[in-house]
Length: 346
Image (tube, rainbow, N blue to C red; front, side, top):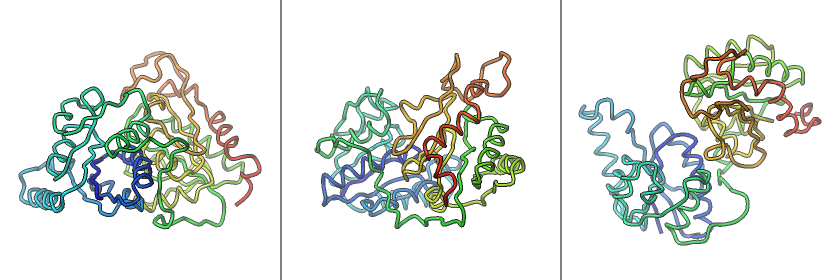
């Protein structure tokens, strides 16, 4: 049996789908999966041993010049690849109109969220089989439920398993124990204050731990260098692939991050981590897995679910909600998660 998964983006959403693939592979040992995904995240499905083929698309890039010859050729190639085989089932795990259209281009019985469950209800028009799943459940639970209903098995009990094969991740080995600080995120309201990162790096330095700082773009690199300048134990990482970054995370003693895709990667790899939430609510899309803790702001307008902070009162930091999540609190959560003795071992 062969099935097609459509989950194109984003990083956290893609990672949230992996436990459902693990469930399906265990319930249906003969099942194999192809995965249609944005080219930016095409490395991730290959980390799961039940995924045979990854079909990359570039919807984000194609939108900027859909009729250009190069983009037209790429789209036609993706469509031919998509229609190469007839699938025993197609699962649109995205629930958007664009993903539903992609599902309609493939050959096979299409499954997806029902009108009341899909993020964009009209997407349900494209499915032969529509499944009603509560929108108040965590994203991982919603996806596991969708796969179970689509493929006809009982939703398993117990802890979730992202199913990532460590053999496919280049495990980073270092001479000394290190932490990873995931400071970069797209929303300004998700950004923990820069001076807090510097203080947290200082606390790690006092504990004899190095700090590694990924940087995905110029803005993040500049911030990472400023954070590193406040503590002699911090190092800014060069540009890396997602697989290389996964190796860095896998080798870390612990991770502190904001609400960003790489925080979900740490959770998927079962790396002990504290994730900081201010503008967003972890109940529906927070990091989920072994040794994960949430440091949530306790502020009148939090979580606001806004990209831009609208608070205009006095506050020592911006966004103001993060004054309720100071560095010492985050550090205490991390050390409690790791254990005091672990902080001085390699």
